[in-house]
Image 1 (spheres, rainbow, N blue to C red):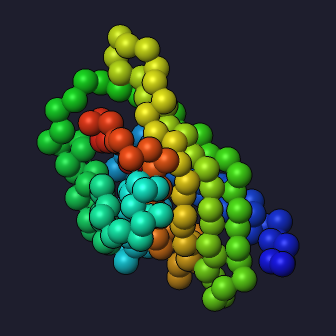
Image 2 (cartoon, one colour):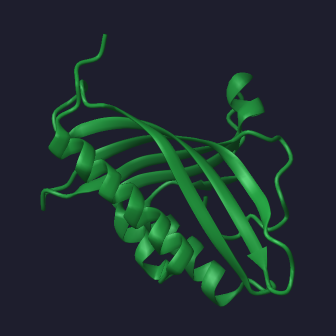
Length: 162
């Protein structure tokens, strides 16, 4: 059985996830890469591919620089109808039993999307499997973030990060 997670660590993890969804939903999106370590990875995959142990990712960024490039592309080159998203995260499970200054976190997510002058839809649901690291400044960052979508069907509007 895993040991209990210290209250201070749980609060810090919850704060990181709250900041993550706040940036994605309210902006500025340019702040999103700051939540990742320099050598972080960000992946979006389907549950079907995870279950079959297939490496195909819908989105793959293998460093914070690649994450910054993704933000640039979203902000400067993407042509899409104006939209708002609402990310909901629940069921955080934290395992801090690994290396010092590292913890693994799993959580459920649901992302709702409202395109201008249309009804709100459920854009995506799934699970996060993340590794967090404490940087030199003592702050937790994502070392890897894997967004596992429940559905094998992904909307064309996979623009805003999950």
